[in-house]
Image 1 (tube, rainbow, N blue to C red):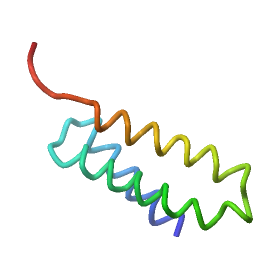
Image 2: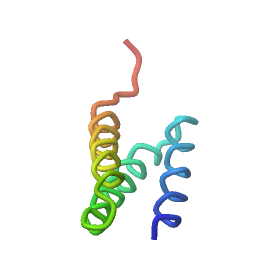
Image 3: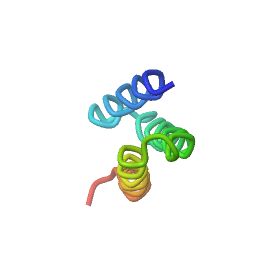
Image 4: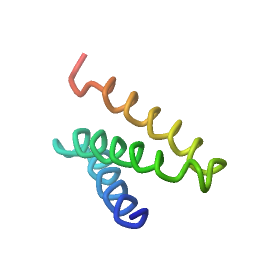
Length: 71
């Protein structure tokens, strides 16, 4: 499960970095899925799951606040 979510996150990250129109939405969706999947691993790997959840929240916040446009 982690490998599949990780591959999707890498693809979404490449879309964001290359400024593709689908990158932000895919990044938010993939980080959301990653955030939800980390809840399953809290009892087994809390030292790993909690920081990853915080990182996922930061990614969602950053992608949601990012605006493309000219000023």
